Image (cartoon, rainbow, N blue to C red):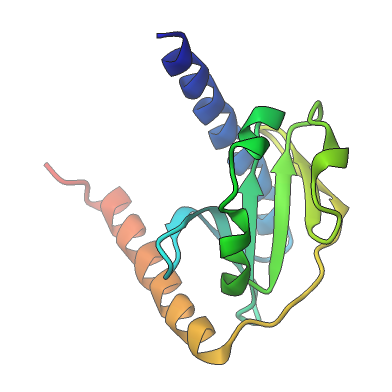
Length: 149
């Protein structure tokens, strides 16, 4: 029961951080989707696409334990041009890899503390992911406009 409550609180905080992250990227002209499964089966917390078709993945970490328990984050790197960790203000930032971007977020906004290095995606992968992104966004919009009965 205690683990369930901790997991629920962690999930709630991740949802709120994703909201702040999306607001930041919206302001930068990106289209944002949350909880997007990429081709290798991993689910990105936030996937954004800018006006030039470049992808950014943001991995949200709510606590040090959350970060230490996750060894899968390197598997996202081939599915984005930029990669960031987003954490709350009280997160021990020194444990995060310095070669990736860093964002501090809350439910209302976010700030880039360290820009991500850019590594261009494979062209075929970009095309497939662009189609997936558009299709997923359209399906989600359709469900908002016409929810199942």
